[in-house]
Amino acid sequence: MLRSNIEMIINSLKGKIKILVFLIIGSLIFPSCLPDPNPNPIEGNPLGLYGSGSFLFNGYVNFQDKPVNCYYFIPESATDQTPIMFLIHGNGRNGQSLLSSLKAAAESSNIILIAPELSTQHYNFNAFGLCNIFKDGENATGLNEYGDWSFNLLDPIFYDFNSLIESNQSEYDLFGFSAGAQFAHRMILLDSSSHVRNFVSASAGWYTLPDTTINFPYGLKKINSSQSKRQEQLLRSFSKKHFIIIGSEDNDPNSNDLRHTLEADYQGLNRYDRAHYFLAKGISISDQSQIPFLWDLRVVQDVGHSGREMGSFAINMLYPQ
Image 1 (spheres, rainbow, N blue to C red):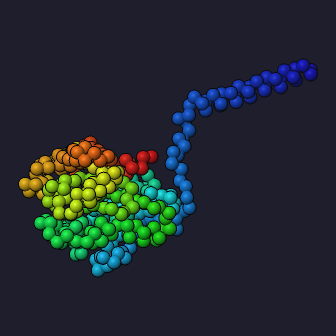
Image 2 (cartoon, rainbow, N blue to C red):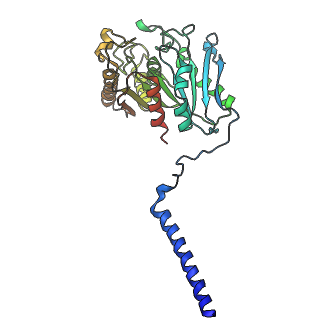
């Protein structure tokens, strides 16, 4: 009787041990059955502000009379450590709609978006696309003071926005689409003080080349007077992370608003060819000047001139899940 009871207990334990061994082995052999751990766990303190909203910015003294409507989107999972991306719209001045088209991508990647909208009322193409470098940028006359160059708006907007949402971010990423890419790439060529971490120039129509022998707006001549200052600026520009992205199908020479001048067409007859020419010119000049070069070009397959698709690509590139 005692012996049979002991055998029953042993057999029961054997069964439980087999089940335990199976569970342990199963967890090692079949890890895909379980959800993957988040490679970028959300850290930091929750924010007190979420969702979509806007505010009017006129806090930069040089442009106090030219207010900017700023639209933003903050995912519910955002904290004070969540990255911030600025969106610079195209010539349609549609910052709000560009932001709206990228909310899903921002939610998925847990990033905060802010889109300043530079209205035609206050920012003509010289002040927007040509960054107000000159009073007349097309003819490179009347060089403005550095503080009047319009990309200097971004840092003060960033400071105000950080204060508004109580973020602890010290840098931001910049995505410019179409005419906004003209703003972005001219900023990287001439910026000396901003807190931008990564620049993304998407689908620009034409470019200011990093060439100090060609007059602005197609080159950098007339901006810095001395050779040493020109070399210093090239060093600063080439050492920034700059992603030039272009759709493989953005190759229509008759696309709306695509500039065709002698100088622009020398860069290529469509946006796709011009993006490649711009990068090649940068590589050539960096080699000649023996300056390290951190720019890169990415082609987005099967995409034409689309702010939403280029923006989604940029978000996935900078913030992989």
